[in-house]
Length: 319
Image 1: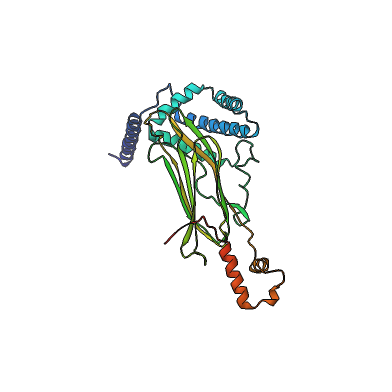
Image 2: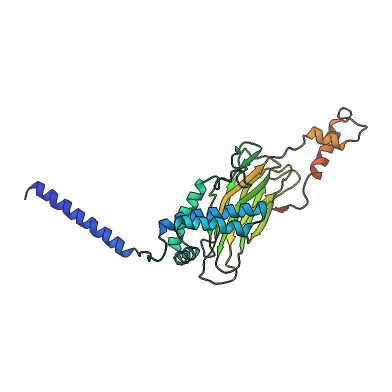
């Protein structure tokens, strides 16, 4: 047999094997029933759907017309794709009971939402007003993790953790604001979401142990949510951590229950602290001037000022 014929036969054999592999893969991959929205189309619909709800919630914050705005924007998004709310709901329930497919669909959704720094023209909204600040400025968005994700009551999709160290752009006295948009899609059950954030500070002269300031917030309604970490004078932030958690509301249900978090930001604010000379001048009697006080007196007054500036409600722990 000639070499050319051998090559032809080998090529035909490889083609046949490849075709069989594709056929077997297609046969083993369960198809989505035609009565449900197909995965790629559903991802496109959900992007418009969540954006429509976000705009409706923002309009509610301005004029209180939530029901009217919600119906108008959501109906427009559904009409754009030629579906009804009932068709969307039934498809979501179908995918929700199949965690791997549901996760894959929403992965596309959150990736697309993360790419959109502005929510359909809401460039001046509360959620985007800090987005353009540089990390080296006095005000900066220092969040560098995912800005959008979903939570469901089903582990391991019920929790999102974050943890990172600070860098040289942080200063003593910094305060923080975490803000995000929450969008619940619940057919039944209690909305039971939680946000926990903690900032650890370096040891200071006033405190023999590290200082940790922690804040917790329960989330049960859609809309813009905010949580603050106040300034800690003379304490340098060194680590920030926390988590989002969606509980099951103590109800076991196979119905759709999820929370979408998007436009997540952590805004850091530098605080202008008084200089040592200014503090001493404030504490000294009017009859005395800085020039008339010896070095030991200045040291004593400075120690007093530092002690008075500490916060009494800090939580501390030993390393």
